[in-house]
Length: 197
Picture 1 (cartoon, one colour):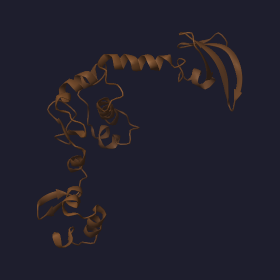
Picture 2: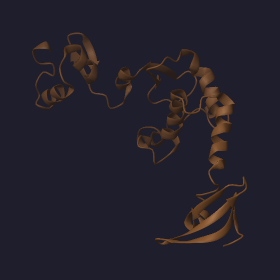
Picture 3: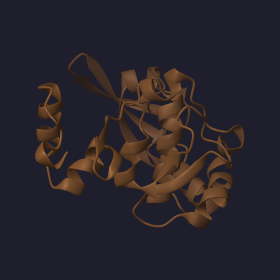
Picture 4: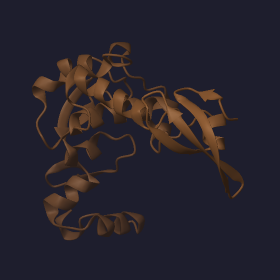
């Protein structure tokens, strides 16, 4: 493998075995050296000494200056749960056909998304879809307190209370009763709020 080039890395010398793999010292196009597993080279998992990742982050940050902020994380999470089948919440979003507006995707997508939603953002708020069966798109997104987001979920448990219909979480707070207590009462066929209900 000496002399072979893998993306930005050129193999310079064999370092030795490591378990079932082999370590190679490589010289990066930027001039730095890196010790890399053979499987990382062959599988194109390791493409540079680390300079490529730094350049990518710098490029994204230069575009809008918000990489590694909560705002950028909100956008990234929205895209992730709608597109990545390995995402923990994909079954509630992407698998149901929920999509992100095309103009909020790809290069410049975050900047366009933030231009639309940023003016109404405040710390502590969570991105919500007005129509829970609709897409993340202009006209169907808003900011709401994180605690209120439970009320918009499809699997939210609703109960009737003296103060009107409430989701279980809001009722627990409003009446000072634990959510588990309310669930247990519902399961037993009892009034969820006890005498208050």
